[in-house]
Amino acid sequence: NRKFHPMDTVVDCGHGVKIGGDHFQVIAGPCSVEGENLIRIARRVKAAGATMLRGGAYKPRTSPYAYQGMGAAGLDLLMEAGTELDMPVVTEIMDPRDVQLFLDKGVDVMQIGARNAQNFPLLKEVGKTSTPVLLKRGMAESIDELLMAAEYIMSEGNPNVILCERGIRTFETRTRNTFDLNAVPVLRYLSHLPVVADPSHATGYTRYVEPMALAATAAGAHGLEIEVHDAPDQAWSDGAQALTPDMFDDCMRRIALIRAAIEPE
Ligand code: PEP
Ligand code: MN
Image 1 (tube, rainbow, N blue to C red):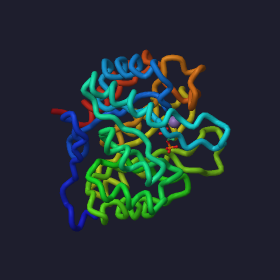
Image 2 (image 1 turned 90 degrees about the vertical axis):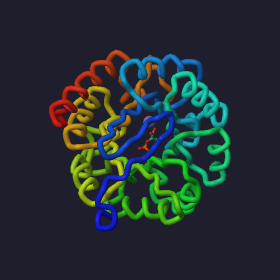
Image 3 (image 1 turned 135 degrees about the vertical axis):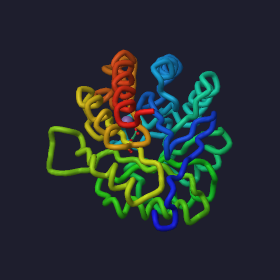
Image 4 (image 1 turned 45 degrees about the vertical axis):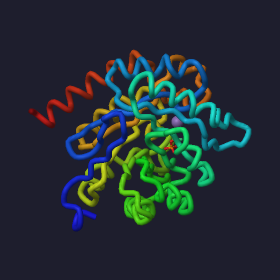
């Protein structure tokens, strides 16, 4: 709450990468860790200017018959890539019983996905660690409920929470979710925590990712989470919303222009 924290919280994600306040970061990588392509994609996103690497090893799929993720082997691939490229790794945790595994593997940032946004036992369990948590907004979660979910983590002793707007469910069907861009300035007004936007899940279509990434940057987000895949039509999940590495290069250049326009030196 701003009343008790007038200053923005800056979260240290490791590898010298801080987010919040004046620190803006781009988290990029594939939806799922699939294997050897991870390191290729990671090298490209790093070269384009991404500062944190994402990839899901435990995937919350709608169907139990869909690809569920590589599990611990996926965490190993992520950590190898993070070490090689000197980038913090962001990856989703779904089960409180996996917290110790994530700590043992050295995961830099634990992501709580939209489907677990109000999984209170999971929130409390990651709250007992000091590892940064990227907390996504649930698909039917109000801004106040998101802030209370963050309190569940912080009240257990972990102050390192990053909020993420990733779109909510509405009557609109032209996009996968409805990107609530309002949430960016509203969260920045109400909370001291860093605010990230995820235009990939918020829109669901490659063609809309860049415009909404730019809009979120202009709206004051402290960071973006963007899915990138080198062969989107073969991706094991969320190919329809992936940027190719070339598209991501262009997107990063335009993000830098927006940043320079809104925060002149
Ligand atoms: C993801 O980041 O791949 C993901 C599953 O996101 P969300 O929880 O926002 O749907
Ligand atoms: Mn995804």
